Image (cartoon, helix red, strand yellow):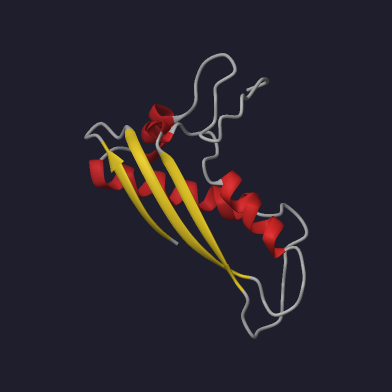
Length: 121
């Protein structure tokens, strides 16, 4: 995973670009759907300054395929998001919890970076 993130000194994230690579093995499986779920999970519950972009490159390799069955991309995506949040926190010298709260979606039915309304948030 490679990422670039723009942020203010107070930890507010202004924009984020993420590029990742996924091992799809050599047989037909659900890797494509897994990659889609990872991309949808990375934004998680954060605003990202309404400037978020992610590209996930699925690669067929000459190794056995090993697609996950449970959770299907969500843990991987949330791990990427939390790694970025913690990195920003360390750069601005603030606790990660403070940076998380500052960038978290708020309000009635907030909108995700994918323009999906979160009705019951």
